[in-house]
Length: 382
Ligand SMILES: Cc1cc2nc3c(=O)[nH]c(=O)nc-3n(C[C@H](O)[C@H](O)[C@H](O)COP(=O)(O)OP(=O)(O)OC[C@H]3O[C@@H](n4cnc5c(N)ncnc54)[C@H](O)[C@@H]3O)c2cc1C
Image (cartoon, rainbow, N blue to C red):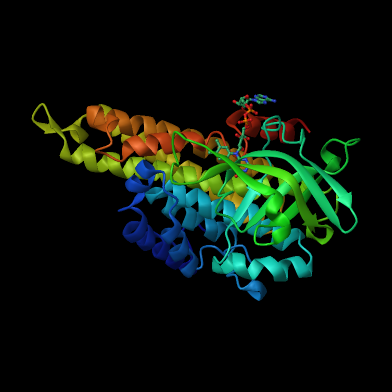
């Protein structure tokens, strides 16, 4: 059993850390304030190979896997959670299911472009009436000859307006519930995708550089050979994909939590009250100790889940545990970080204000906290 990163992983971590420090950290506050998608940063992340980490080498990826992806995501999210979620969704919610369930033709068509960053991926499962109850899909895909015609509204699609490929879920059978859902590869460059319209862009509390949009399907035409897996397999694919996605969001939480801890350590040494650094007060030391301990525990849960997934083992409960614990730990760390900064932490002069807002989403997307508990409890009770 090893608790240290092996050489190759540590090199990848260092590359990600240097990129995050030089390219993300100086810009993250501005992207947040301007709600600007970090397009240049994503292009540079692509050059470093961070968009093809779950893509097999045969299709231009590095095939480094989920553990390496977690290590990279922690570093990116430590500096900019908007960039972090964009990279996470692209790798774990789009590249992974395509590599796992795609036909040879589908993989050849999309994976090289996804791995190189020529196109970005988006994952569109949520609908107004299908949030936690994701099986309640109302968007309908009707088979007409050699294509499907899709109508309905999808919401909260991360990178939905930036993506070249949208993995979009729709109902193909009204008589079934979860077994009546199919997954479609929607190529936004294809003229037949003209029926996919970008709707409202969300104004968000945090991760404001990440783009979150509504997608309206108005007679969206998708070739029948762009169904991922078999018709009716969509929900199974969605759930398997979310196991990996939750590990990615848990890594995001660890990264944001670490940013909170590092900022708090720095401020505790600098800020003087009662004639000494506030870090000399035991009350502050205990906060730092708890933050560090919880983040270490969270990271171990994340790495275990990623390691299991890389071995091809089922990790549904472990991924849910990692997300549940890491997202809670990140929010506790963000809360304490603001407290340690006092009034300064409540202003945009210090980054902990942004970390506090960014941490909040990790308890909501890719399954809210109580849904993770539900998944874990199901695995316990059978
Ligand atoms: C910024 C952002 C980005 C997103 N990106 C994407 C994306 O790229 N693709 C995508 O498909 N979706 C995306 N989502 C959607 C996200 O996954 C959902 O918001 C999430 O799954 C929760 O669904 P909901 O918001 O409808 O909440 P609801 O399902 O309405 O839940 C509301 C509350 O009720 C609780 N609850 C619901 N059911 C139960 C239950 N059975 N037991 C106990 N408690 C329950 C929940 O835990 C929650 O606290 C995004 C959301 C946001 C905010």
